[in-house]
Length: 122
Image (tube, rainbow, N blue to C red; front, side):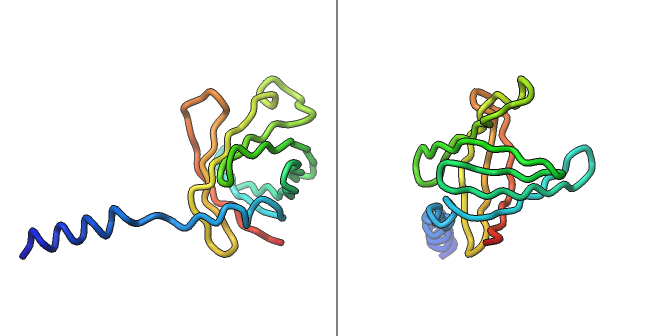
């Protein structure tokens, strides 16, 4: 009996896939809050398929967006102000809800990955 239950639970769990309606998030206005130096800071960004405008601490940056597939894209600042800003960022949407998505991101070429949640405002 317990072996049958264990097999059933394993079968159900191995079939679980998080919801990913990535195309719902290609365009829109979003917010993302991250902890930076012990402080929670919020970025607002507007994405229109291939262009992203980032609003952070009273400044606006423009980035190009190149979609690899429906759930992954590369972001590259169009007017970098430092060597660090010249590097592209790989973004991967891991799961979605009605108004948010969980994503993983890293500098292209780096193995260090971070996660975040973007909330769709409009």
